[in-house]
Image (cartoon, rainbow, N blue to C red):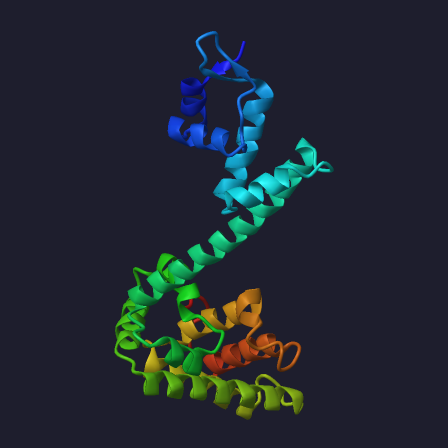
Length: 260
């Protein structure tokens, strides 16, 4: 027995008027009629309607859908494979959009109020807000996190430019010391480690030697942070960690703890 137009409307989530339109243009025509002359859909009709609705959801115009379904070389499995690939592409785009919205939300939370052009000028392809959620989860209840959030919220574009320039200069100096054969516990390496710690104190939070140790460990152990140093010289992230530890030992700093 066929399925009445009202039931197909309910099952497919479209209006009866839409089904009538599809019938009128020849896109999905019910194969049967009741004795009273009402439309009645067979199982193949419903399968065709499903294909139409899939393509329609993917943004195809009705004329193009009709041409796709008219392809004699495309069976049901061909359509399903095509729709799967199209859906995967859409999912990828939507995930990218969702990630962009998440980054915008994190940036707003961090109060980084820069224009799009200023963000490109200051950060390039680096997105500080991408680490914000994890930082908040790991250190949100610490004084260091509170200080960092407050100070960075007040930073202007000029501040951010200077902040990044100082950090990059120290990293490059570390790379020169490392590739020049200076030991991680040499006076120069420890001087750079102290310069790095002072940079954090000046811009971010009161970075104790204990916190600095934890940060150095994170640089070496977390691939996301190591990726900031390894392109300059393989093993540089571990060298910076060792220099930070040596500097903390020299200053009589702590031997453990977290980082920010």
